[in-house]
Image (cartoon, rainbow, N blue to C red):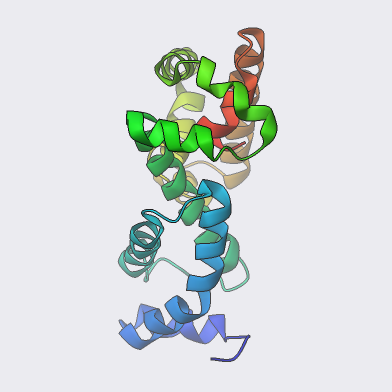
Length: 193
């Protein structure tokens, strides 16, 4: 396959239920998404399942995709959100926690073994619960449900810029609160900011 593909044509074909267009996207994006995912996890376990879910989401939403210029960021946002969901799930599993500790993203995270992941999750959930209602709603749709900014804006009937504002404000508050608790380095494992 050539290095470049015609995203506009593929999006148009996807909207017409052309499975070949999905296969074309898969062949082009799979190596990039795999590399991105591996750099996130540092392990290969489960990456193929996550990438498969990315393309399932694209197929399910094929009639809503209308911008070739933002498709690249769209597919990587879906991937990132699914990776975050998987990471949260793995952090609830003792064996996976140990693997993540041993293969931490940066040396500075080596102290993670001394901190309980459940405590971090509880703290983050408490902070999220105290966010203003709309900010909380937007943040949860973004992080927990993996919706794009555009999808959230459409679902809530607000502007994309408003969605971005709420997510930025929520992320800043969570970061600030975790910093006060001395847990800031773990924030990257939980939310990938």
